[in-house]
Amino acid sequence: MNDGPRVLAQVSSALLASALLASALLGSALLACTTGDTARPSSDAPLVPLQAATSDGQGSATDGTQAMGTAGDAPPRQPRDVVELFASRILPTCSLNGGVCHNANNYPDLRSVAAMEDVVNLPCGRNSAPDLPDACEPPGDRLVAQGSIDVVVERVAFDAAHATATITTAGDVPASSLDGVEIWRGATTRALAASAAGATFTGDGRRTITVDLTIANDEARTFFEPQLPLREDRIWPADVNGNGIAGASAGWREIVPGRPDRSYVVARLWDTTLVPELMPRQCRAWDDDATRALGCWIEGLRVDDHGAPLNFYEPIDYARCAFTLPGAGRCGSGP
Image (cartoon, rainbow, N blue to C red; front, side):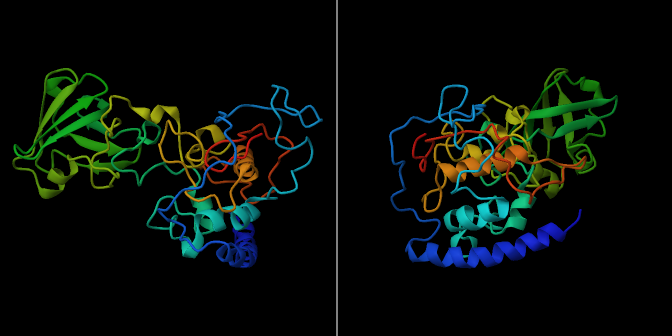
């Protein structure tokens, strides 16, 4: 990847951020992660779901709602690109005081524009415990064994007293095919060579498998006890929150290029069906224009064959943006 735009953007971001941060701090005596009274919308307008709205050139959307900006021009208050979006809206709202809220220890990391670039296509909600939303559940580890057995692990019930785990799989597994079991995460990562670690497997010939950990090593005993937030050394069932829904197929990530309607950072602004507590906790510099900018920036993102952003730092194309979310969440002011 050509790092030139990224380096220049970081320098520009730092200069602009310094000035904006000073003014933001003057207006706020609270820390970014304050637990005091939260800001509220300035109107009682109901939440408006994501919708494709196009302008007729007069500032009106073709679906009858008011378009946020006229065709061909960005609204005056909206950031030009992700550097301005970060410095003028994200930094003073979400990342004050050195990134108290969103930093390396609080997912996702929003301390800088470069950190935001790393958030593209990352799994969402990885700091959620115990209420991981269905939308943020992982695809699920796979149980791989002899005889071309390769099935997704849907649920795991761990019994510490009896040193056993009961696995429910997404498909039937012949009882005779449970030798040389390995647990794989994704296409290329072997999470655990389970049989080699001393775990023994017996099945009912269908979707239930019992794992005996009596003589297993400590790594295997730890591995078969699921935990939230998700940990690399624990098994990842597809229904890790245990509510009967495997949510990974919905395609949510923190930022999904081209899909603000599947980007968790956008949904956290308005959708209480995913997580009851909306963000940001304090509106500060966030409003409808900021939400519009974030959604349009994500909608315009393109990536290469390896998932790396191609136009991360380019101007936000408001003229072609179909994203609209007026009056939503804590900080919306209505259409």
